[in-house]
Length: 207
Length: 225
Figure 1 (cartoon, chains in turn brown, orange):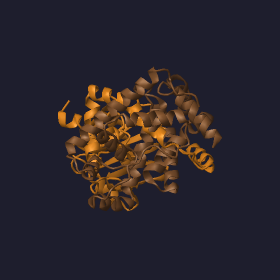
Figure 2 (cartoon, rainbow over the protein chains, first blue to last red):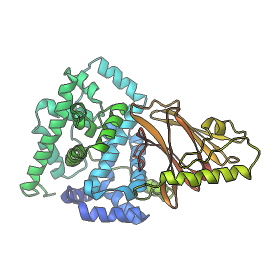
Figure 3 (spheres, one colour):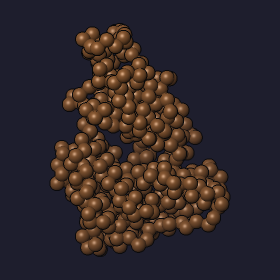
Figure 4 (cartoon, helix red, strand yellow):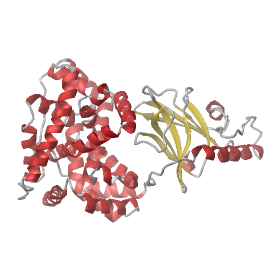
């Protein structure tokens, strides 16, 4: 527990410009260095597992997803392109997609479809119960709150619960085009808010 | 960029597209630098959403993951592959040679200038010694068959639900790097000579790609085929 806190803290203070350090470690991974791979795992496993658990719900399936994600990181390490983003972003992109693909391919997806069809009120999940530094948690939460309600709902339903945009549109009773647009401008606002928070001095890195 | 595709950018980043739209968007992305730029600029913010739900994984998972990867082959860096077509000739000649010294299987191989071998997947699949692998993929069932006597592998994607504008491509990952072995045409199957390496099948835009996409449907060393 304590270890995860520390590790995530280091990671969050480095990212989004984790660049050189993590990219160097990943280059060693690409050369088959298991020790370097262990460092990447220690840095990012809480985030990968957290996303997987949030999206697929079932903890044992979340473990499987985590294992698949890191196996993919190992396989693809030589193809990581630092010019297109940080190691952390790359790994979390793989993680979220794998989690979403898993939940959609499972039997659970049928139940989800019924859920959408019935237009039941949905829990719009967000950051919570996290083993993560207060700073990162707060930063993401504060910036999510800076979104319009519709932007925030659309982003959360898609990211944290793995719904497709047509499902989100149905749940929120909004046109497809509106939901697509809100997802995109929501992410733009999120990006700008996080950048501003960082510009204001790495701010809340007090953990 | 096409406005309808551009509109999907946020949903793409949030993995909120159905497989077909995702494949279409990625095909578009490959050709649109402006779109890639916007995707890249929004990815860190998207990934930061994970910060809100971090959770400590069970401790034994670490050793399990390390054990798994220690037995997992790594992919080589992506290299621009402008050689595949010329390479076809060598492969076809090799395949023909195998047949000439071979086993009385009456299958002809036409060695053209640049043409892939004309042996069909059906011929390989129906070989008496063919070993079948059926893989359940997110697009449906993929069949791969290997005939040691013919020294050929057949890939049959006829049962897959392939998105419009996309197809499947077969690769050999050998000590020499990643090489395209063939792109599936309208008949959705292809036969390729066996090489000493790992066989991969990926989804690619129609016409094939110079390097494999991330969408890997099948991967297996030749020795296990």
